[in-house]
Length: 63
Image 1 (cartoon, rainbow, N blue to C red):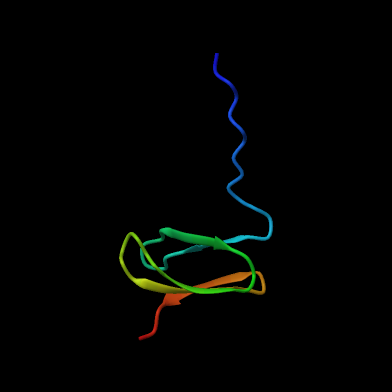
Image 2: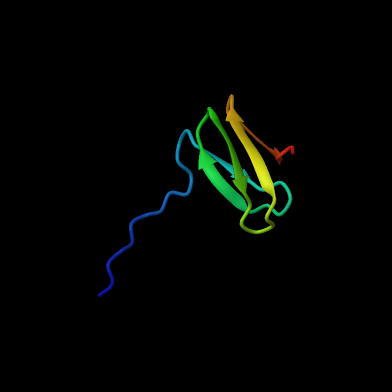
């Protein structure tokens, strides 16, 4: 007999998703104050992610 799976909550209150602006791959989930660089595993571009004031900004890393 199968046991019921725990309900998965994809959205956590106070956290925001950041996606690659080029290929739309989800890169991270973070809170206000996040400021990081991530290499997209799908397209290989380096993305600058800033989460502040309840908004998410993703842009290509400036060289």
